[in-house]
Image 1 (tube, rainbow, N blue to C red):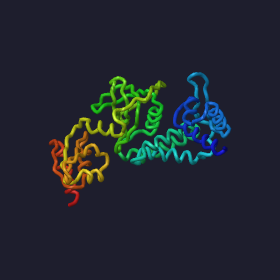
Image 2: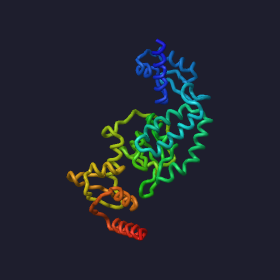
Image 3: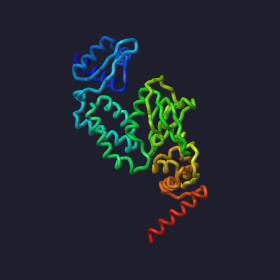
Image 4: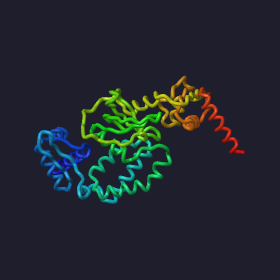
Length: 319
């Protein structure tokens, strides 16, 4: 009996960490118990030191708030700081676990005491030059955390956004999902002004402000946010056109490149077409260099001139 209560209390704690506020009825349904049992389990968590706040009324519920100390049985201060910094680093640099790191970071920050938050901020500042600046445009970890929480809570968000032609406009959106693509992060959201789904590069997004207004979750076209964003990226217009016909299978190229999945199109079992078009000539060169096999190229004159210049410099450097 005691083990059942302990397991249920841990499950309750986990639920409280995934949402800003839960109603007693919702928690009871998730735990398959009565509302009265939920109240008893909440009291038990409070006795263990977990700061669970409650509000009365029709819209009342339970929420896990920051406390004077970290909740017991989880982490000490040094461990909490170390994990928070590691999660920030993972969110910005380790392909494949970015969104998982953000979810974990949102849980940790929700219960972290203020004194530890200041330590984490200081460490992030001292590490920023190494962690972010050396890999091109990256998103601010604080911005990523803000967007992750807004997406989780389905809270309407406002911000200023600079388009690729340099125009800055205010936006009001229903945030859905942060998505990483190579060295860039995007926010997938439903734009209230455009009444349509849009993707926003986070390095062009400034002054994000949560409005306090929550809306029901809106279903995106399809079921995979990453696939939806990848399709939008590949369909977006680019400044420089470069199409390579590669003498290798699509699977071979896909296994040796990163971020090109939607730009690789098989022709037959031994040939594929790769769209290396981009807004910057250096990005075109980097994509073509990553192919690591023979290809023919159909490209704009500016692209061909830049490739010739780059190749000539490389040859001169080897003499």
